[in-house]
Image (cartoon, rainbow, N blue to C red; front, side, top):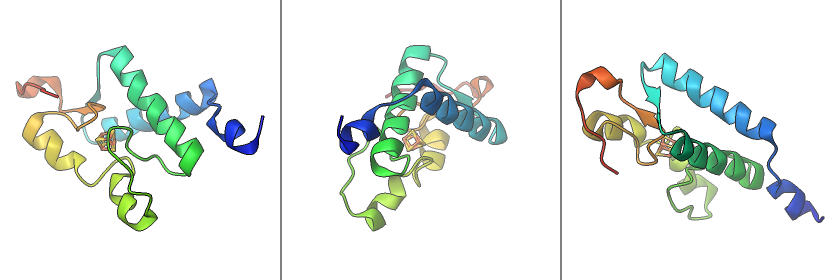
Length: 108
Ligand code: SF4
């Protein structure tokens, strides 16, 4: 396997690490992670893959430009997530959700 191939191989540990980080970030902000385990793990895997491949946890739901300066905005937690959670109840990827007792609905 070439170096690029190796970088793309994700271990369970990579995913666990990102999940633990996301849980802690959500806890600090009094948010929750997506209760849909499948959807949650798609995003976690995407973040882990991007970190392995590009060195940063780029948002898996947004397009990278390839310019590290511009793409800084979409390193998770992206610059948009706070407003998105306030306005729609969840971030674009539906990783972070406002606490369930706010009565907000979450539309993709
Ligand atoms: S949309 Fe959500 S998952 Fe994507 S970078 Fe922003 S906070 Fe992270």
